[in-house]
Length: 638
Ligand SMILES: Nc1ncnc2c1ncn2[C@@H]1O[C@H](COP(=O)(O)OP(=O)(O)OP(=O)(O)O)[C@@H](O)[C@H]1O
Image 1 (cartoon, helix red, strand yellow):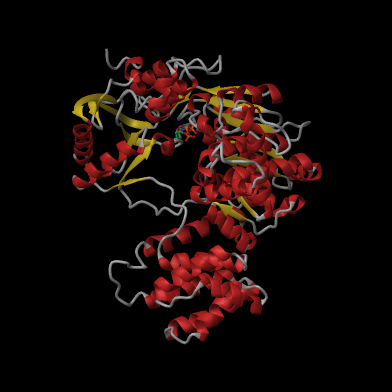
Image 2 (cartoon, rainbow, N blue to C red):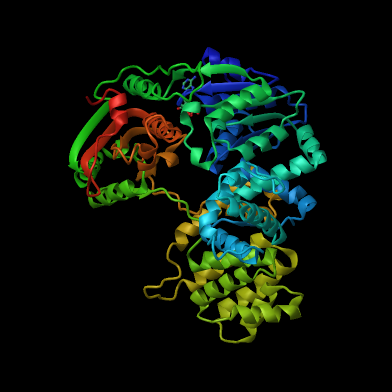
């Protein structure tokens, strides 16, 4: 039996919720994720003889992996009863199975890089039939609008409100570009992140049998961090839920919406409640933060008008601790501020240093903090997404697998040749690979292997690797043994000495990241279900950034810190034009943008477990700045 004795009464009520729609509306640190995972574990345990499944959707792979771990710890071996996944991963899976209904093949590729998406859109614009000489429409200019249309579930056939606000002569061309962009993606068997969701919704909408089948499998639907959903994700969700049973369990906090720019909106929660007639449980008790932090968090967020009317204040459960739980420091310049923060962190003992985080609204502020921390000898890192591997062995491996999966992909043939040159010093022209592939049933990887071997200029180890490892990959898609063979080959090559252009730079970290990511993907799908398609598409959805060194101090934007907790929070650059942002200040004190900035501040300060330090300066990046209005709203300055 799972132990529910540590839950408070409200949490218990939510965990015991059986059928019908429920919204758990609660603030940070109130145990929302704990409630969600405990409820899923309880249902699985109590229905051991049944076969229905539960689906829980969230936004990041990290959050999905954490849910999986928590449920596995509560009900070991229950993996096949619950699908704990992200919206994007779920959409990927759906499209692999049913994409053929709209013309997609299961081995579609995912375009992850902004530059590639812009180039793709430029191609669409160029092929369009209208006169662009006067409008000067470019991929770069249009991509944000195309994103918004995809996020707002604008169907290709309808005319969007978003286009109606544009100059009249641009409305039809842009609508046509949107239609062509979606069609061109599908025709070239590729998708980008927003299109993954948009095309899934399209399948649900146009193919009710698919919708029915999915609803039959998943009797219970759950969502974590619902407040982040955009309209397309919301429509995906509504299609998943059986409209009679309405078994939808949602946890959310409208005070933590910080993705408005990505299509999230305070109104969506209101719509959810009316669309589904949700029951409501609030969890005001906060287990994470010191009472002094809860006091200022309540003061701050009370200035926002776009909140659920009945939202209860946070209540601190932690006892008042010794020492200052909240500190505010003012400096002359931002350089001095960064130096002080670095020195304050450096002065802590090693254990406490490992519990610190530096937060700021912008990367620029974090870069200064990182520089200072490094100068003080404190190991620190900036969190950033890495879309592709950069070391030559990993680039070779990734391109070879992609090419095996999609044997006529010229871009992968180009990448493979480039990585091979960096490793072996042999130049193979990708154009030759393409033309030679005709003799190999159009398979560019076989052609590549043939050219490399026939040139006779490669080392024995490389020749053996190509001869023994590429045929099983091209002929039988044996990608697991190919991965191991590539690592062994790379290790043999690594004995040579390199100059400044070391093709192995970052290899050790990247190999580790590769293993971690493949293990995570196998954990999510079950290793027997991980085909080459699944592996490649799931890799595309994940960051390839290395795991940080143990004990090093994270320097995070507020967005990157969401859902996390830290012993000591340092929130820097608390000045106007930073937090709140310049754009929000320009929009005015009651604007949606200003309310979002206030929520950013709210999210930042409520990451705190023990102490919160906020800093600001008179001069930031060469400009005189006023202290953040939020400091005043929290009654921390006069
Ligand atoms: N009943 C409880 N007893 C003791 N600790 C609890 C209880 N419920 C939650 N906690 C603790 O409170 C902290 C926050 O819980 P959790 O991560 O589930 O919060 P959350 O509401 O999802 O937070 P956020 O909105 O900030 O992501 C965790 O450290 C968790 O262990």
